[in-house]
Image (cartoon, one colour):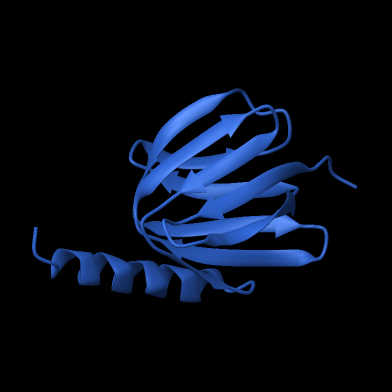
Length: 109
């Protein structure tokens, strides 16, 4: 069994997902990042896209709209304007991320 760490996906309205994970994959503005337990402390800007979380009971994916990623002391926090969880389906998360991007582009500044 892989070592786990805590993950929170947070929007201004609610904590969308919180739990223990074995791995997190996300897209930052600098490129893709894979996170395992004991990762080096990191702060990065998130790109609109899909986040994939592997945990003891399976996987989940989320479409997110930008934000920030913080890794500190085996805790990963993803702060984002918008997010939606899709159980285990990375392609669906990518589709949701594209919808979030299109919706944000249509909003007044």
